[in-house]
Image 1: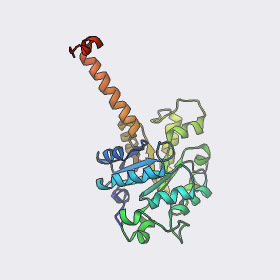
Image 2: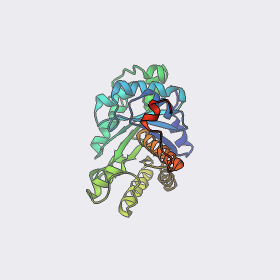
Image 3: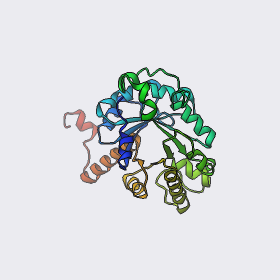
Image 4: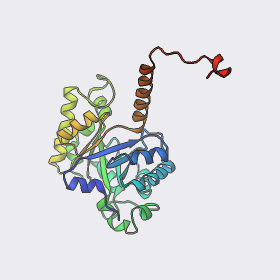
Length: 273
């Protein structure tokens, strides 16, 4: 089986830079995978992506050599198992709130006797290797999202779940879960109480010998998260990168042309274009 590069970087104490895909397009996935990320995650929860398209996106990313992961829509065995059969090397599961749910998550990711995953790696048998069934439990990453007050309260129990590789913090939901609508929604939190909560999750994960991952909105915050000790940081997503780049291009062009007037419709029609 092809080795999971995330696990190899972690073994060398190197942070992982993760990309994020919300647009249902194999070409977008191919482009993102070629930009130097260590891993790229397809978002089936909030992204505009379904299962068949996610499979095509996994195929498009294969040539790049990055490690592909998927955020599944929910704690659902069918979605998790099919995602892995399609070739994902890691599962990020939202809204895991207690030890029982963490145990369920692990069981859906691991084959017996460590779990209840059904054997049928339809694509993974080709994309990962014909010995997939022998090594999958050791190579597939299982991450529980910590993003509610209940999850924070039950964090030590969640972290004690055998077979869990780590936790993935969703700062937008975490902020709402801990404070309601006291603050703006979004990533890159600066509020002291939220930063303290994020760093506490990080420290507890490391004390349990598990990995800590954080979703970020920009490179500066991702770099700061790495300086805190995070093992994996998501820098941004394809939607935000496209929007920011397009806006920057338009604003730069408008600034450069200043007060220059565009040709009128009449002059264009008469051949003056």
